Image 1 (cartoon, helix red, strand yellow):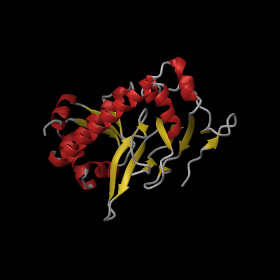
Image 2 (tube, one colour):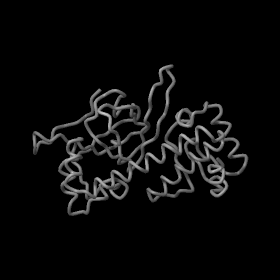
Image 3 (cartoon, helix red, strand yellow):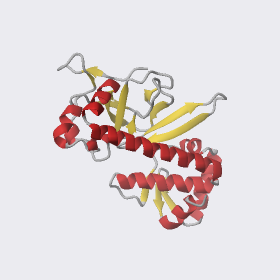
Length: 246
């Protein structure tokens, strides 16, 4: 599999995607490049381009060499791994502003697939290393985000080990609402681009259990589901208390 990466016509030695404007990027305030002041964004812009995926297309396949780092501009993706017994593990969901590139591995450890149509900006790994050396603030931002991601991974491990299915789903919805808040969107309504099967594979549950948990949260008047992919949080305090029960 190969991405639709094109050569920058202004520099045959610089790999980029289709032209990109970092200073006018709609997710700049969410992305790692927010660490760069506007007058320094030109350096990043010179190395950055856009790539576009349709729903179902792969950004990367497990085992492929890592050549680029990405920031999600729009859409949603899922990170998956196939276990030895054939089961699928959903390791996480990637949305606006998320950075794809925190790894010391030379090859992808997960397959990354677009759930919806998605746009991403891409920078070669050597290019990002060069930028971090030149602009320490960027490296600091990457370190902070890596720590946040590590904390989130630990929280998920605790959830899988200690929390009941309804508590896991409540925690997932609270986390999705927090993402909406960071994007400046209404966090009383959560849009779920992923399927119930995706959610089940992420939470370590069966799809039947996830469906029962949604029913229970609706019955308890914690949420409403006016549309299949839309969840309205009716009682945020109780939902957060349930998510923190462990």
